[in-house]
Image 1 (cartoon, rainbow, N blue to C red):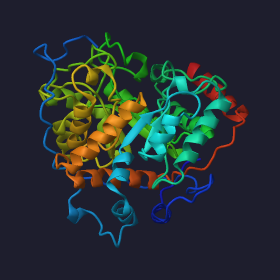
Image 2: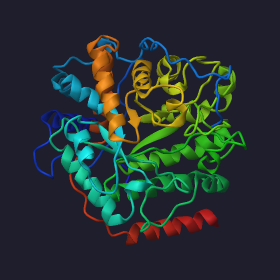
Image 3: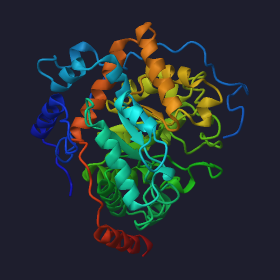
Image 4: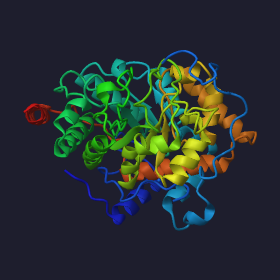
Length: 446
């Protein structure tokens, strides 16, 4: 069903978040109901040697915090009026930093280190990859165990996947597999894209996932692109926007948080950012005429979350990739495009970052740039590095605590808007959803 976004539901959910989770496995709020606006923020919307000079981008002193990374005090409700702000004010620095980390987990069952990340570091969420999801029963069991561990924490756990369809599929084999976006793009019917989003949302909800890193809004303008290809709806910006928005709305309508990606655009790269740092030598004017069109449409549609790519755009910022750039995250995305939702980095353990930065430096730069949630996809040690570094850099004044507060506020507002919870999910009967996916496939192929 499609969710409406009444203000009353938002207020009730905020009050429940402030009240905190109870100590049993059924703790949490009721089913998600998105709010009418994205979470609040600031103002108003792989080849080696990937830099223009052939050298690695600067990894020296971190950039200054973006002026729009933290909402000005005058634009935020007072603590007495705003239950989310009261919740932020009640949290320790460690708890607020934890909310800014989305970490990968070790395997198909809950490990000791997974428990530590949630119980001790109180991370805001987890991402599950193909190695975590082998079958339906195991997937549901793992997700339930992750959520149960999180019950005592200040806010419900984000459980995210990359479920795009085609070659980027995280669902277990019991689900009928969906095609890549290109197949839907070739059909060219927005209603099919919208139904695809609804079906993906239903599938994820059935196993307890509450966040999807989709839809892909990249325009596949470079036929030699090694990483996007059929993950994009096509080579036309208007086509990508016309199909991406219905998919976004379909995912959102099932109570799943959609995260559009990969801003400012990964479609014209010739390097896979999983392996090294791509460079796109386009001007602002060129990007505005192609890559940015789908993202601006999503911002106009109040998209709740955006993932920023590890790509160097020298005409925008000669020194730092988009994910670590205050020029791109703070000034471009926040100020110029008036985006006020949650910003995710792409995985900070990808080659585009680790070949040019230490993980610690990348984490600091990402926060100072204005990113809200740092994706740390692989390894407990990496998660600990990010957590410990951010804590130390706030304490020594490198990162203002107000910068952490701004992100914590946006994250809690997002979780409240979708009324996330840590309740367990029963193993679903997939008969109905698989039948609906099969029927949809016939429409796409006809």
